Amino acid sequence: MAVASTAAKFQLGKLPVKTDPRTLMLARYVDRTKLPAPPASFDSTTHVAKWPMYANDRLGDCTCAAAGHMIEAWTGAARGHDTEISEKSVVSAFEAVKQVDPATGEEGAVELDVLNYWRKHGIGRHKIGAYAKVATYDHTLVKSAAYLFGGLYIGLSLPETAQGQEVWDWTHSLSGAARPGSWGGHAVDVVAYDKKGLTVVTWGRLQKMTWAFWDRYCDEAYSLISNDFLLAGKAPNGLDLNALKADLALV
Image (cartoon, rainbow, N blue to C red; front, side, top):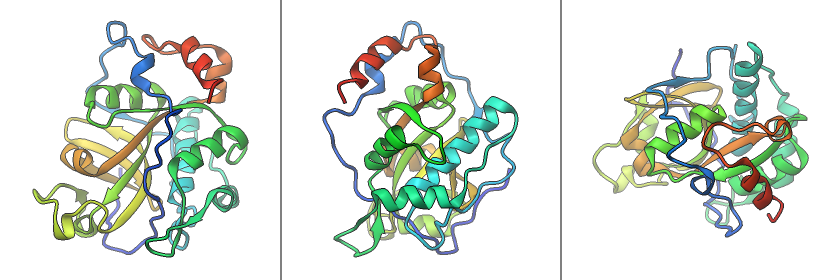
């Protein structure tokens, strides 16, 4: 699968992490004694023909572009072919949640705002039924969540050093050009992983990153459950779906 080069300048748009005490935590609903060990590798890109830019080359709508890419990966895995939602649907969602970043004066959005909009209104007629935060330091749970729910919706505090890297990797420094956020905040979705690292979708292409990069620059990660998944009442082994539904009613 082709991997993106980040040498070109594209738009970002993820605003700083928003803390909400009502945000559900995936670890609360997981019984580690029943949860199967995640596979060594996972790849949900097989049935996706292409990844649209979704206007992220001219708008800071990465938070909504990532939603469009997740829908593609989900439908591709479920049906054997992907459903590509329109750029208009992605931009419309962004228009509903966008804010101006006081630090830069540029438009962007908060991931939690996008998730709440997606759950209530849908994007391209596709809704999520629930979302839960995943602790980024717990690599086993990160892998399990990506495998069981068909990917992860994540936020990165990108360093400038990533601009010239074919594979995003930590340069063993966190200062200067390697400082988290020195390039800006970016939303992407995890569509694959293996022992070397993870693959995300960004700017209409696939981009690899190492686990070392993930540990230093991923500042939020969420597992998402489609509405159809909740309505069917099914859950992966080890997930307490009834408790998740009950808590979701309080959010």
